[in-house]
Length: 186
Image 1 (cartoon, one colour):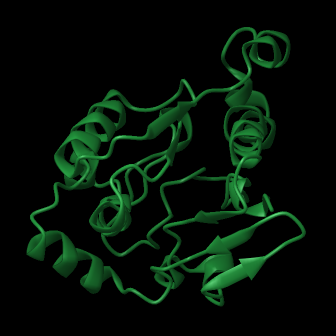
Image 2: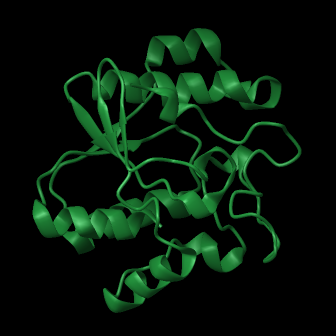
């Protein structure tokens, strides 16, 4: 679904900074899709943001923190790197949508904290509207969506979901966890 937001952004400014969290745990298909999409849209300022190497070495030396503590893994690989990347900005744009349910159902279009304005331009778009936008603009879908992945994150914590499941049902399956924590950042 991020392709719709990135397409909208590319219509305004192809050099707008786009932050890609390179967690080191993405599916190979995600990394390929990221490159293909950026090239197709002509995005010229995609920043691959990785976890701090020292922190990774001390807190997840074997690369299996996700097995023991998914929250700590998300903090290390997503929350901390994004927080640092956002330091140079006053605002950021997300692709969150209300139809994803859970805590996103009452999501406002704009959120303000002491440090940032967060803009959620797609919040009221339905799944059908996203699909229509993809079709109208000839946007490629993430290759894993055809394999039953409606929401795609890191490979250890993302699984296919049934067609009648909640959109984010494949994320952290079997755990109470529903978010990685990046949206708690200013």
